[in-house]
Length: 342
Image (cartoon, rainbow, N blue to C red):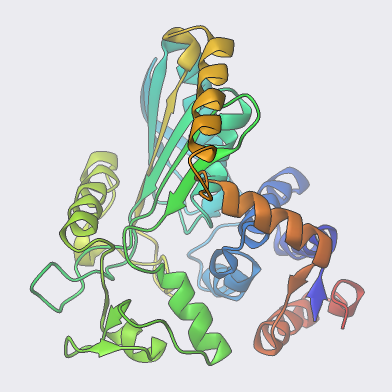
């Protein structure tokens, strides 16, 4: 079964507005969700929507209201998301960071009391579109065990960085674990195994069974390097922004629990350092130099390729996801077959 990009966004907006979001907020959440699917991060796209619905049903995701700025200076803000959709809180927080960076050169906005916000790179992309460097991090429910241990204590803690250039999309978006937890959840839904070298079971033994991996722990990427980076992000998006850390982080994968994770959005305006056009030109020149070294790639190339392919061929919907979405739509008096084709 196939969803075109246009149909997916329309379906998401239909669901969200039926759930109580206003049209503007629904557009933001839908756009962020579609972005994940188009880039190939399907574990963070429409496949997560059944979990979001559970979060709403349990009162842990709010469909109306606004965020609250609890602390603020010219170059920073601490935001309380008031339990709203994570995509909405993250979008508004990143745009606030961009606005402040345009005035001050650099700005940081931290959030707590939010929810899972989809793919991290969507928000660093907002910075690129505004000719600003964007850095986005977040913590998640524990998934990584400290090196030498087998009890999960640290989240998969993603980081995304986007840098403006003249023509090339330059961006990285990655978990600090060998795999995002969402990919394990997606593999479980599809009945697929996960690759070797990704996770351990509850006894600390290697496993390719996503169910056992979710009971155990996910390995950090790059051994001690990924572990150390995940550890640092845990604090930057936890204690720094009045959110939880370690085993206190809940609600990013299990939406029956209140979400206690945190996010950090950093924006840097290159025009305050150097001439903007020259900055973008030099970045493009470096991209050209790198490409001339051989059959290589620039961070962001894969996402550009995936977007082009998925916009052309549409987005695949597996049977279980279709059934989950159909159940949601039936409860909201939406005909899912108006959106999904065989």
